[in-house]
Image (spheres, rainbow, N blue to C red):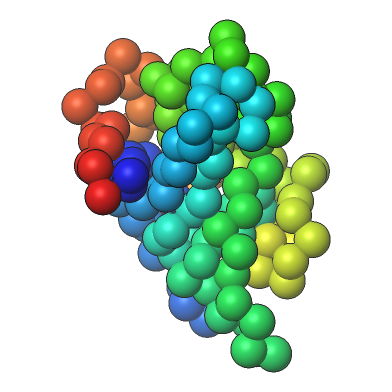
Length: 145
């Protein structure tokens, strides 16, 4: 399946920061679901983020992105976890990058440096974006692929 979420994220092209609101996440549910190992998530769309390594990324050395998402909710999946809370956590991750715990990929380390120097509050003000409404469910869509 593919999950589409609407959240304020960014692309970086050379020195320009470009706001993006639409993101795709691959969701695979295995036979072991809802137990650990029965579900996996992979970032599909391009994004400039310290905690997400998108599959659309290609490094200068020609290495492709992994789609790996660094989020504790995904690492500690249990039979008590639920999809709605997890998708909300993914949306929060996009809008609140954690530059102090980046993935060890060039693009993620670059994003870490950028977001450490430019907190999201400053960026939202620069692009005139308001804080997201936590009760807005209309911006999450799950598509059976």
